[in-house]
Image (cartoon, rainbow, N blue to C red):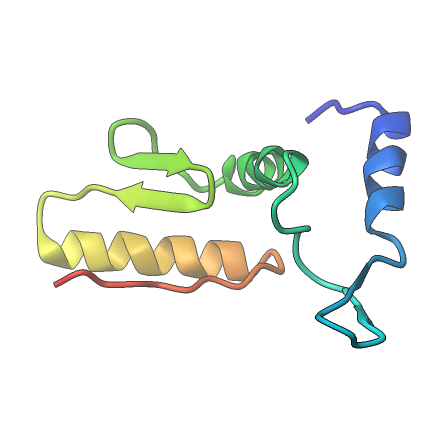
Length: 104
């Protein structure tokens, strides 16, 4: 993505040793995921998704990425299921976890 190394290092330092605290607990270290509620989280997520999906995505209007959502369009239900499963496999093979929600 041609992001300068100093900027990558700055982002990484924000996540190194990050802790979360709930009520009066001592908290615990957060080792995976994005910081919730920060302005940078959506931007960082989209940068990662852009880099991860370059190799396997088709193009507009068949696939739309917005924030942490993906919309896949297909001409048949079978094609749709196939394309969603391809996305899921490709993204998970690159170390991310996918939660699929169906709205029937």
